[in-house]
Length: 343
Image 1 (tube, rainbow, N blue to C red):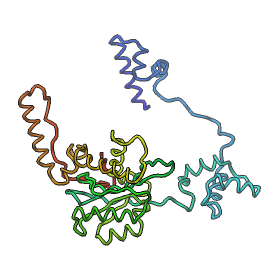
Image 2 (image 1 turned 90 degrees about the vertical axis):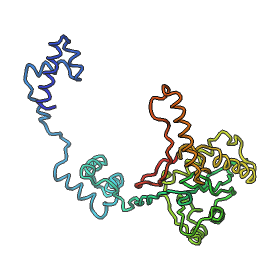
Image 3 (image 1 turned 180 degrees about the vertical axis):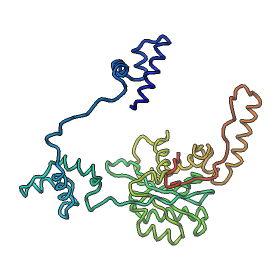
Image 4 (image 1 turned 135 degrees about the horizontal axis):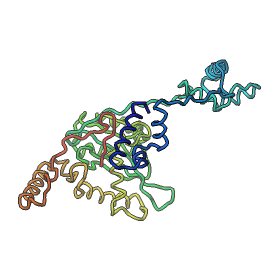
């Protein structure tokens, strides 16, 4: 606290006391001890503390500090942390400093980060993708479905259009392979009537996603590829959000599936509900199927008219504007390198 701050504090406390406030509550209001206030008033505002007048007996000398830095940065030890250096020196009957001393000195000199030659690999952020209509950008992933046999799972392959949120392709298998993935994406591609070069497919870095068969299929179909950074699930938020909706919906079976066929039967029912019944919050509560067919424009327009009529009929119940019924015309994936919330 500067002398000016102290002077202002004294003035404020004195003004409070002149107005009838007691001294202690006035000091407490400024988080100031009453004895400190009294000392400032009596002895002045100068800070008379002088700090320690003795040098610690265990303080490193400049020579010792230089020897430590020379040793830890030598070719033999420059890639090792202090916890490795100290015992190696001890095996040579040498002791120059403790581990904590070395760590403290290296930290002060900003020499502690990634001393090992094996530095973490830097992954470039995914390219920003923007969808303004259906069938521009798809996202896909695989999720586990429990089976009746412990340790055995069925695998749901799910492709979703990020603009409309419609599930455009799916299937269930008892394994994860690039061959199965290429089969599902080809069927979805043909069913949606995609033209070569018109669509980008985004996924994580799983083995089926980067398998030779899958990559060859995407190249043959002229589908552009986009991948998440390793171990960054937020780079693929639309698929992650869809899986959460699937597994937390009220109709998700409480018991494991008995077969691939049973799992696929349930998934078909879910896909129909999700595409045609479910009002998705991320697209202003219209169904994915209606948005995929560009019917959401008219739906939202009519919905807005309903709210406007209700407001005119009873304006006292409306404190502001009616509910937002504007269409979401742009959907981003990894906008400015940051994954956009998909819910």
